[in-house]
Image (cartoon, rainbow, N blue to C red; front, side, top):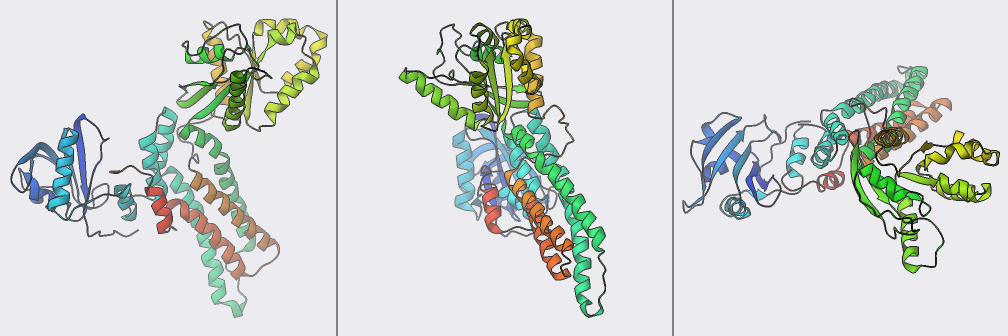
Length: 474
């Protein structure tokens, strides 16, 4: 993408608002250095080399010192936005920051930046593509080691390069097909249909792998809301406390102790999990508890993972019948959400395993996603570590490597899905022997969807929506 020469200069605070030791005010635009020199007393910034740092003062037109500052200059095209950029490091008083910015706004042609405008200019000037620009926002928002790895990989172009390679392969075939159209009367075939069929199938395999990575990618980016559910006194609160390694939830032998949900977040192998302990699922006449039960059911529908706790002691002592048990399990499975059945109070397992009346339960375990725990024994760290690993396995994060290409963005997912559907149309057209002009239309549709990911195909509405979600000054 060609360099774009913006005529105006923008300014904004790039560090978080509020009081701190240092604040950074950023300017970008053709005349950013010139306008800064108007208020800077120190070396002549216009005569300095790019990537140099200079101490001085910022003053208003009355020559009043607003602050002692350190100014760093970056000259085009060697800057984040590929424009002239100035970064003013001043003291972090909100009063000082406001006076410095207002001085530029009142006494020069500089205007206040829109949300995400620095990154948008970087994109429009070809610093990086649209997927990489979105990775900037992801990187700012990371709160776990895994999300950091994914954002860094995307910022460095790992995902983009894969999309561009797929798009280029299709584009080569489109060019050959459209070349055929120029020789329509001579009945020539430059694009071998068999090779095109194989190419489309190969590209679809890659796209489908990327699509299947979205669930994990989204979980890594946004964290995994994990609901701990089950009947009263199954050990849900004890399990939460064991996972968090603190007494977060009240534990009592009295059924119905937890009447609302309790939540906290921990990181497992760099992935953020937000664990939510809920009220025990049962029919109750207690109005307050019944509200908690309804909230628990709602939280289950919103979860990405359910840890459903089953009390083996109750199962054995109450001699739970098969029908009652499977009605309980069916209610959970019908939610169609990743579920790990946590078989708590594992010391009762031998009694159940050796009792022929529970043979049906043994059969269920063999075909279900289960793990045994002894949550009331919170000193058994090995037990909890096994549970954590199993949780990673359920969301398929146990095979995640830093170099893996993952789809983390809903917009990218939709574009890939639409591209895949367009390629389905290409295969149908090939099978039915459609002419090159119709093939070209379907291929161009796929190209547009792939191009929309990296910004090779974009419009102002899409760009406005993406960059409007950024912070001011980024």
